[in-house]
Amino acid sequence: MSRSAWNNVIVFGVLALFLLFYIAPNQMAKFRDQNAQTLVPSNATIVQIRFPRIVLERHGPNWRLHPAPTAAVDIPALLQAWQLQPLRPEPVLADAIFATVCQVELLYSGEPQWQQWQLVTDQSQWYLQQQQRIFKIHPKEADALCPQPLRR
Image (cartoon, rainbow, N blue to C red; front, side, top):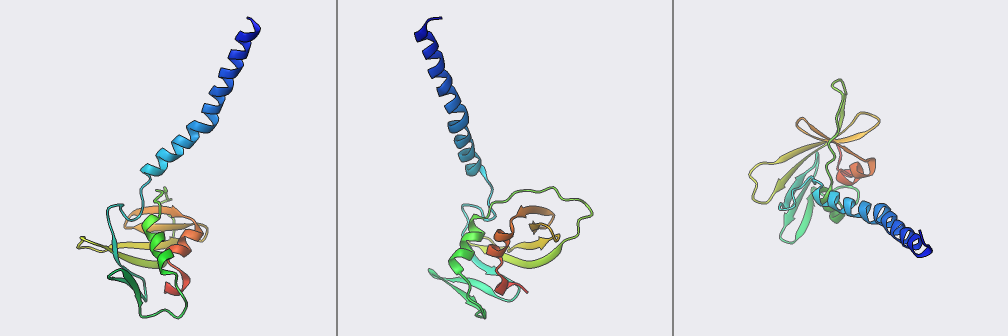
């Protein structure tokens, strides 16, 4: 092969590697993120959240906790955590023993029934549980979904 033919092979090889290592994984990540299921459906709006001792209610454009907690709670961060929490199904052993840390009920606009969720742990990992469905979450996500002042 001539020198210019080898140059073409090298250029196209580098372009193929660029496509393989940079563009393809980014496009796959975008596709995965678009199809990720979240805790609150994208077409639903949270109207009320009940924690063990406190209720977060929507009053017009504002939100109110009652009774008022003794420690400060970042309401916008709490709402965002519930609205955007991704659900990652996790197979769990049949003999796994969970301790319930926080039980939460969500009410969406236009929905007649409350959605009940439990934040549970098996001492090494945190999970969100709804009836028999269990989703793995990170400890930081657990604290965002049910901050310490709102737990039992």
